Length: 168
Image (cartoon, rainbow, N blue to C red; front, side, top):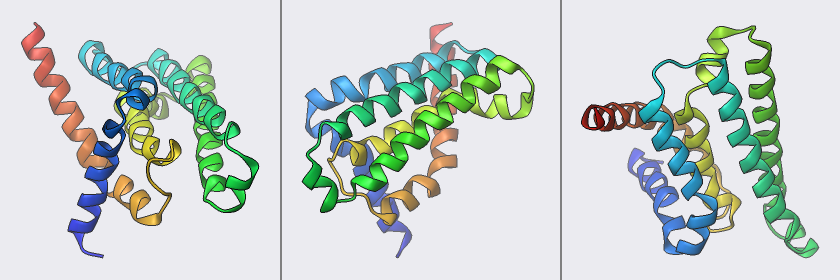
């Protein structure tokens, strides 16, 4: 597949949730707010940030699990709900891992990675359209999320620094 196809899928993952404002308000607005405030007010990543981001991941995973549990049993048989459950459980597990890592204060390098709000929020924002059922789960979307992860994190960093410079 050409690169443009992945770029189109990436943009679709960002835009599609905003076609239903009610779903964005409940599912994504808190994540965007966390991302914005986290990038504006954090000076140095710490173990505490890893704990906070772990709670964001656990919250998202539990929210997705609640949404999936409310779906009918027949929808599991004829759709990709199994993938959605795996992602929800992985978010919860990853969040718990981040919380434990931050509380134990053992591995500083890993805690610094997990302590960035752009790390946890990026994946929550990008997986949300598929978890909420706006888009179908497909490998093209997952590949687009992974391909654009580092450029998106860098862009989020730059926007955070730009906003911080205007606030000061």
